[in-house]
Length: 72
Image 1 (cartoon, one colour):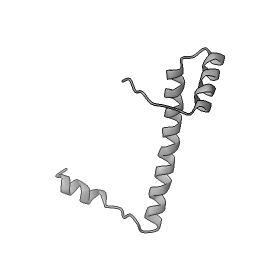
Image 2 (cartoon, one colour):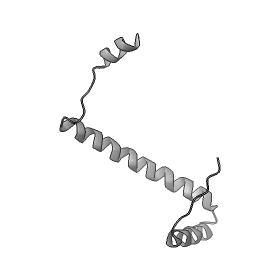
Image 3 (cartoon, helix red, strand yellow):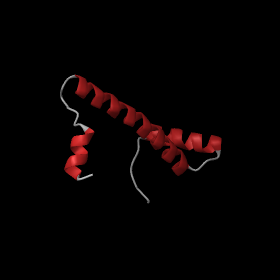
């Protein structure tokens, strides 16, 4: 899939420098960077959900209830 977007000049310059230094395509560097960042965000989301459970903003549903509702 091809995407088009704008980035800050500072980030673009840094991307160019890293690309040249590592002799790696910019799209691959961006892809790897986003993958790392999404892993970080997954952790932040998990922490938020845990905090929401601890503060009763969210509740757990028993797995047996879910299975029963789904007919499993």
